[in-house]
Length: 123
Image 1 (cartoon, rainbow, N blue to C red):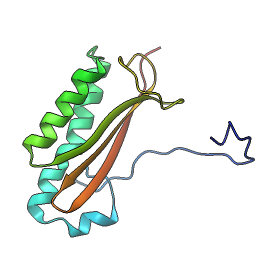
Image 2 (cartoon, rainbow, N blue to C red):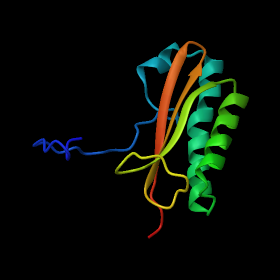
Image 3 (tube, rainbow, N blue to C red):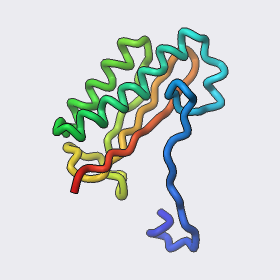
């Protein structure tokens, strides 16, 4: 949008800031019970596993999304969405064969947590 509307600003991306256990930092984290927090780690763990799978050649988006949903659901979460998109255009991709981002939102108890991971495919 910044590029399309020719705004005179620069956007600088950065990695997600994480707690020591890997959970994406959020003000909501303090409201999670110990058990919910342990279960919520399924989000970041499933993202890391998805990135590893994609970089190892399993680049079918739907299969990766299904695995993420399964892991989070098995941990007791309710998945709001899992999307895999091309990094620049944010258009969903069927295969991870370009720089991509996986986005996840899931509920644990009353709290909706979000996370994402970038995947830089080999040139």
